[in-house]
Amino acid sequence: MTTAGTAALVRRPDGSTRATLLELLFDVIFVAALALTSTLLTENLSWSGGAKVLLMLTAIWWTWSVTSTTTEFYDPQQRPIQAILMIAMVGSVGMAASLPMVTDGHALIFAVAYVGTHVLRGIILITSLYRQRHRAATIRASRFLFWFVVSGVFWISGAATGDVNWTLWTIAILIDLLSSGARYPTPWLGRVPIDQYERTTGHLGERYQQFVILALGDIILVPTMRVSRTDLDGDRIVALFCAFAVMLLLWQVYVFRAGELLEAGAGPQSGRPARVAPYTHLVMLAGVVATAASFDLVVSQPTGNTPVRWLVLLVGGPVLFVLGRALFTLLVSTDVPWWRMACLIVPLLVLPWAGEWPPVLVVVAVALGLAGHVLIPGAVRETTPGLRMRRPGD
Image 1 (cartoon, helix red, strand yellow):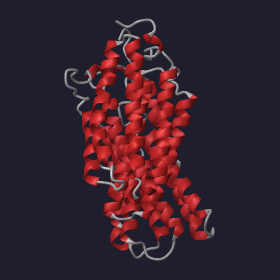
Image 2 (cartoon, rainbow, N blue to C red):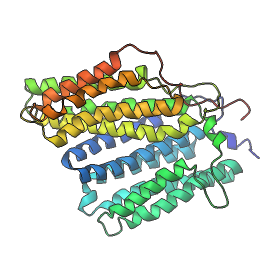
Image 3 (cartoon, rainbow, N blue to C red):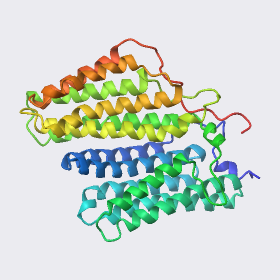
Image 4 (tube, rainbow, N blue to C red):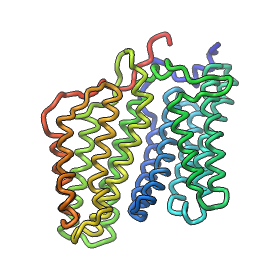
């Protein structure tokens, strides 16, 4: 039975959906980690290097996503939840700081920061909820902790020697992603009830919006930091303007044209947005990191021929973001503006000749294709809006 004390920790259905200042600080620290991920991608520009960066990006994103889900179910104004946020901040700093050193014998720092964040969160939640005799919430937290301990064995084992065993780390991140998709099936405890995904409030939708908007800022931040260490000539100015334009266009795709993550009434698929958002937003986030990395490369060398690996980032980054947003729309409402997405073919059509173009001209073509996707008239809203409200009495 829920006690009066439990209500102080578990978020009330009619409570405030506004993010706290500590949550916003939490976002800023993670966005800084994304900027370092973009820089790391430019330094490891190969298929194998990109796959390794994607794995670490997924770990960083999963830490943010699971922690934000925690602040959705529990009141972030309470001390235990604030402690969880602070631990996640420390963990993100540890992961970010160790990113450049993961392949240099310091992989254990990244693994301990990731696993420690999730395990400590589970211990704090279970201890606090058990004291308050909230059985349902304790079981929910126990499911999460069980699977992060399982994956943690592979994370730590894969870094125990100092060097990364990428096979073990791949198994670890797959355990994290697949266990979440399967609703954390746990021995003797079962899976997370589907109705719990239907009780999310506008708070979780707002958290995703805030994070994506902050992450988009990396598209202009990363190349600006590069320009500050080089000469600012006309070509680099054009590249920066293109970066700014692409950032705004992707913002339009996410927030305005493609619909927002807002509150909505109950319905048969009301829990679906909360379940698919972490995965589809990971695709969008990979697009942001790739786009920021591509502009980092362009401002460092705006003229000359464009290498094939650069083309993959220049064109693939924005396309990946739009496809991730379309995938979210498709999974939520099945209403996707396919005819408008045809504009994304424009950058793809120039690929056979783009290798002979200067990089700054390629980014202009990408910006024009993205502008066509955004500016062609269409429906005001292309997706069923957002993460559902808790129903009264739940």
